[in-house]
Image (tube, rainbow, N blue to C red; front, side, top):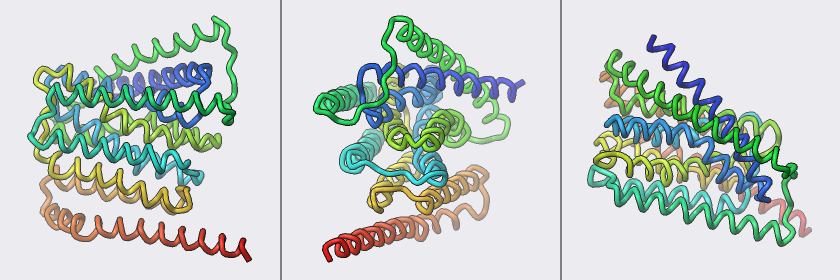
Length: 360
């Protein structure tokens, strides 16, 4: 019965998010937004809706570990799994705006979340600051996109703007939201039962099982976008989702939670710093010729396997956990940045040689 409830919750989340993304993205195109901005805002908000519904439901049930773990785990999975898989299918070209503006914003909000969490709780006041941040970010992105469209930037394909079309896509959004709410309720209930039965903490369940379930819309959206050559939407969806997860999802969750969002020591000492490291790791990869190739995609996916291995050993209290943890911090983490730096250096040298050859 528990497994059935869990599956029903995942199905409702996935189908609801699909309807929400379809409706919201079409409505955004009607408004004349660029594909990148659609990916960073409307599509990102839609695919982040499962995280929002799940975290809010968990907070109202007084399960802050599940609420916070869901967001942290989803952000880690978005970069390492979603971007990694999309790049392995089709190399992704990175726009300058993502590299110079949106990725630094993602890193900044991740660090801000860590600062707010240092005292062991994200208060309602701090949650309000996070929520204000998403309002400012979205407003700025929409105004910037409209200016680009008016100045003759490349426009997206148009959708008929008759009343029936608008009503149809609005219905998609509303039905999707209802399905997300019920799906989140089923998912949180089933996950809590599973956590108690197998002896895992709610934080671990939130970081892995729930994070994967609520990240399915991001995975489906980015993979489909990569197949269809909509690379701005594929990458923008991931970066925008990570920004909205921290600012919007945790902002709303912290405001509705009775006592704010408490932060477990395990999340503060390992998972939040790892989320920040993953965000920072995007910069060297994105500098490798302004693209994420199959090699970089495989590298990202491999790092997620290492991360899940740590969580499993830590949750089971395995004797190898301490050695594995030491290896991660003393060897794997520096190796990650050395590898990324090497990739960036090779890309820079290749570009420099090409420029030199053109001059000759």
